[in-house]
Picture 1 (cartoon, rainbow, N blue to C red):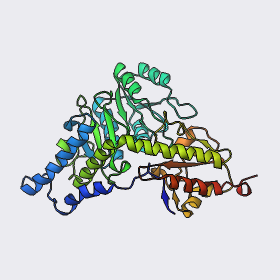
Picture 2 (cartoon, rainbow, N blue to C red):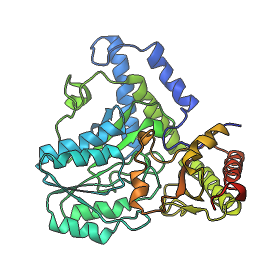
Picture 3 (cartoon, rainbow, N blue to C red):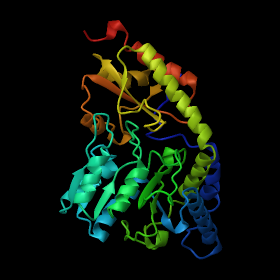
Picture 4 (cartoon, rainbow, N blue to C red):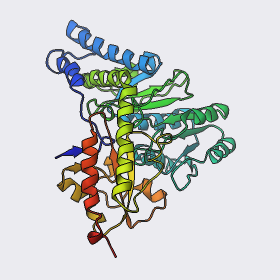
Length: 381
């Protein structure tokens, strides 16, 4: 049996999404910047997709800009805001995705001051400290992710937005993991920037978007042609854009039923793990449904001689999982997120991340194979 529980890294493309993309791969091949009929036909597909995304976010089409993915969108929002708005202070956290963390770190070399909000031992934001930072640092950019990609912790995005509005700060949130899994009503959230990446919600890889509140004006990050209303040079990834919009439409249409299904899988796995492995625990608050992203469960496992081979051994059994962010795979430094939690380094960690395609049978199989690695005869003395 082969099971895939690494959906936070990427999801399988929905067949209906692929069908929506196919005409723009095989038939509608014109350059959308061309004024002839072939180009106009493709341009129509892009603008129809833009309106679909905007409607789902309760935004205006002019506030949606298509990008190559979440990383580019995050870089655009942070770098261009700092340079265009004269920002001298950025507030972030040390458990952000590297698309944000490394971008923020690079700004220090340009003289920008960076403050990191305090986190508790589960990785939850200290909102009192955040407010103190905002009070003492006017004209700040706040960049805090909505849902952590490794441990699933959810930010109270409405509360942070209200704080930023009160203290006249600009608010960017990396919403890649939560986009299309939760409703993001941009007219109710005090967000200046939000981002999406299609392959996180059963769309194609290599395409995403940046939402820019209409009250915010920034210059392009990528220069070239006049595409994306002069905000992102380069010929558009047309079939990717069409696929993104279709995937997002499907996700919103079935959000409640998909969430119920996935929460059932997650709850079942938590119960099975507790019953099968002595000493199992959970990183962050990923086992608390009301505080965590429902698609992610980060498991903290007992000390074991074979913990370094944990992912490899599960892969041999046909179980695909992750130890953290896919962007850090192959790195010898380990998870920067788990390091911030001061967890016992002798304990193993696995991120299980679920999708609408997973089943209870797959959960049972994965837990069974994992439990076999923690039988008494294989456990460290």
